[in-house]
Amino acid sequence: MVQKAKADDSSKAGRPSMPMARDPAAAVAEEYEAARRKGTREALELFIARHGDDPLAERARADLQRMSR
Image (cartoon, rainbow, N blue to C red; front, side):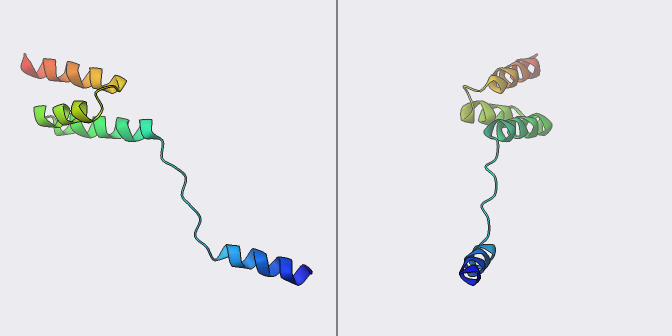
């Protein structure tokens, strides 16, 4: 019976484990920083289009207004 338990454990060891889910807020923040680094209206507008409800969209809108001045 001990041998069977060991056999069951070893079969699980060969399977790849699932990676942890990525924090969605971190992904959005990275995308915002990438848009800012790019420094174009198009990049910021795309960010706003994709994440218009996110608080960082307000920062992107403010960035766009600063570019217009």
